[in-house]
Image (cartoon, rainbow, N blue to C red; front, side, top):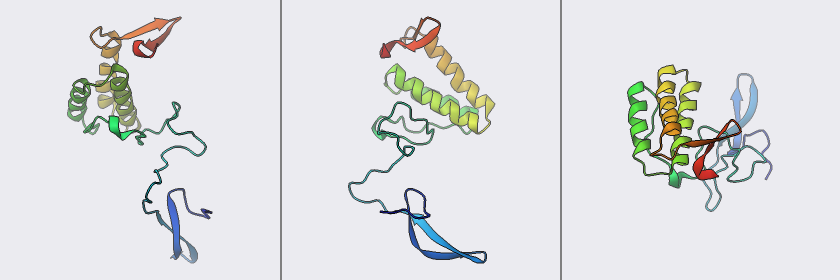
Length: 144
């Protein structure tokens, strides 16, 4: 089905007036049974390891619920949730890095520091498994 002038995930429902022009009235497409939402960039395969969208969760089953980055207090509570989530170390790091990047985009330096300190502590922690260094690059031990 041709998209015309509407974005992916939107469909045209007639025309509307914008200023002096008539333009397509694009509305969010209704969820269709069996069709998955497309959170990836065009041409990117499902489950791609190179996915870089900070705000899309391709596998919500593994999501650690309730993580926030609005204030430093929210970040500290979120770090506690990540620590106590029972997830593997790689999952914890991924959640913390995503939250750190989101806070960075919003310009919240103190929140970024909370998440960065947690990430750095995981790298050093024997309890969490830590990282190993090979030829100057850090690798997560579970992934080797």
